[in-house]
Length: 225
Image 1 (tube, rainbow, N blue to C red):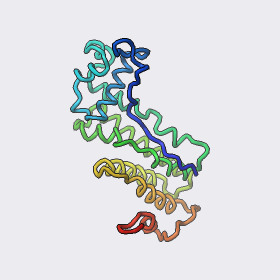
Image 2 (cartoon, rainbow, N blue to C red):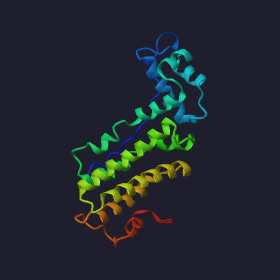
Image 3 (cartoon, one colour):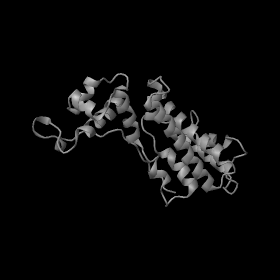
Image 4 (cartoon, rainbow, N blue to C red):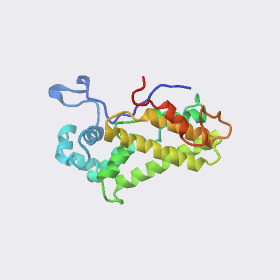
């Protein structure tokens, strides 16, 4: 099984080669500069704390230019989310070198500092906001891809396993942010038990007896070396 770790990035830092004379961006359109600025600012300081004036300053565009590309901040936020992962983790689910079971576990190798869809839903209270709608659609689509892969792996109840793994992914992302620590190793161990218990043909992990007892042995205990 491939054990490499993947990462999703909001935005990379602008290099000096991307700047023209006097530090002005070159070679990229205004729309892309606006989206790049939004990814950086929404990640670093949050959606609600980022104003249009600041977005324009970082993107080096006028308000008039911004409103030519986006009708307002709400539309920009929604497009920011659409750009983040439009194809629902193709680097995991579209891999042909992994078995379906391995693809399910590989989903736990991808974890941004905080899932941007969760972050947007927390900051935006209106359930009808276009960003909230897109975040909800994305989470449903992610669970659907997990369910489809669970079905390929031979799970007896793929819908249940898909929802369990989606919940585990979201919980690990949020808990990692709140505690400022790594929680995905534990989440991966729990996922492995859930997967093996759901797939009749899977080899039963040592110590597994139909519950989550197996993963506890994989979790370092206090005072252990």
